[in-house]
Image (cartoon, rainbow, N blue to C red; front, side, top):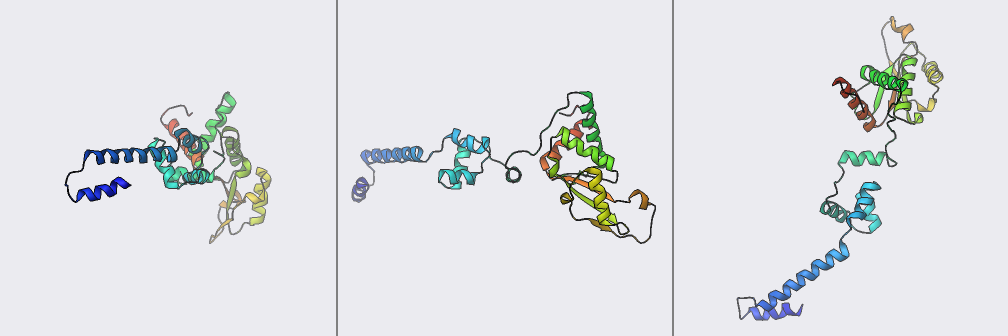
Length: 242
């Protein structure tokens, strides 16, 4: 600006900045701030709707508004909108349409029985060490069938999203075993992962009992796994799971 040039010339003869130039600098600062807010500010309600309600990522919002991703993060913080953790962002990318389950709270004795027994099965037979999926294995098709009913009726999962794995010994035919489980559970062979074969040195008493191997049912969803584990924890603390 011109007043800056004038100030340079003035500064050669004076060590004190005149009040007039101070005033001009204040006006300039106010103008810069006003232009920044009017041209660059992203309204809180716009960000809240896009980020919280519509579950869009900062990158997606930046593309929609044609601005940088850093700017989106700046205004999220400025407006006090909590940002997602890395695990929350990862989960959202894996489930863009929302949770693939819904808790259908029991309302009658039959469904309360189903709920309680399903939790008990996972408590006793489930693999709680796997933190990213609901996973349960057993050689009894009736038990597996009941657990699938529990997931379908209580947590409203899509049964087609279930995956299965079989663990067999070397003296069992994998094709026959898979056919058996498909028939017993009324599931598609496409839902099976690779079969695991365990070698043994000599025949054992397991042969008749594990004729078709141990079947493991998987539902890959960390949030559902945590929900079921938390419900079991409430039972341990003599609380009614919700």
